[in-house]
Length: 407
Image (cartoon, rainbow, N blue to C red; front, side, top):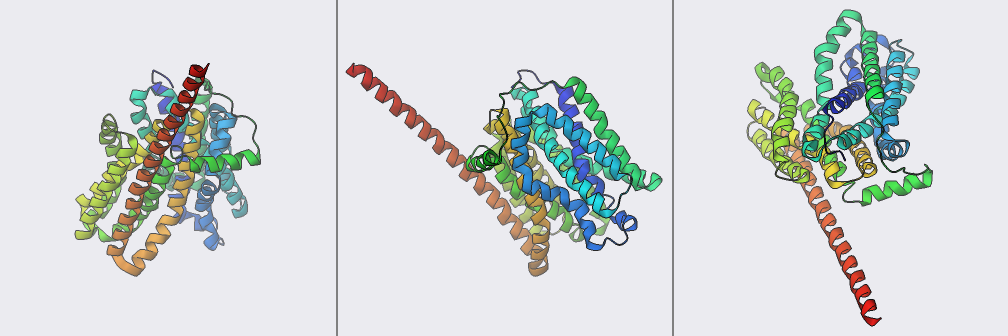
């Protein structure tokens, strides 16, 4: 860990993270234009979005293990250059099967970036700044989507779909050059050779650890509801307020996480702030249950979600001291986050169809309650492990003392 924060490199890594989020967002924001590019694709067109997320579910933790072994700077640069090359290839608008292959490969690039970048940011940040720098990192998805809507869509309207892919490729290449010149390798112990048996063993160890697994465990309940809420909420907001509220919700989430969230972490642990964020989400949902679509209640919910967002990433270095354990925890975040994003929207749409808006609200309340409970359970396990270690240490000291006395 550094005793000084390298803010230029932190912001460069965050900029690279915007490119990683762009690997999702560039397809999402132009999805309505893809049927004209692939007129015979039908339902298969959905895989252009979901393939990246599917790889995150399958390989999230594996990515954390692999990145820790091949080293963080190397993984980051490889992922940036590979992403730039793939985006440039996609600008040629290849046939759908080849486009899907490129999206699958892009998923590997994406995973390497979202594991390596926050680990590098944590290592480049002084402890007093780590709450801010990792909260900043946590905004990369929201900011990237906002930028692509504001700047990417006008570019597509003016120059066509390929222009967006070319712009994305240039963005990744620029940050690859910047980080290649200025980012030095981390001095961390080598992790040893890769093997299938070792990866499976480490995979089990990660989810058995209440320190490594905790951030990802809570993150799954956040992601299960976040995108789904943004998807299903608009029809319940008055038409004259709808566009303004939906545009303001992600910005409110970012603003609260970077201000109130960073300030609060001076006085409490990131895990406690995550739990407080979940409690405030539940209160906001009860407000929406009483007044569906009320703009101020929607913004209150967005702010509460912002507290969970920033603190979940900041919890990783608070609970895990080594870079290797941090990268494993970020791999877990990638895996559980993709699982939550994939399952949340379809499940909550079913609930909405069966039980209406009240059913949706109470389901989300239950999900956020599970987020509070899982963090409480993990905290109890961590305390139990500490007590067990202290007891074992005391027993060894006692045995040693008795042996010395006997001599």
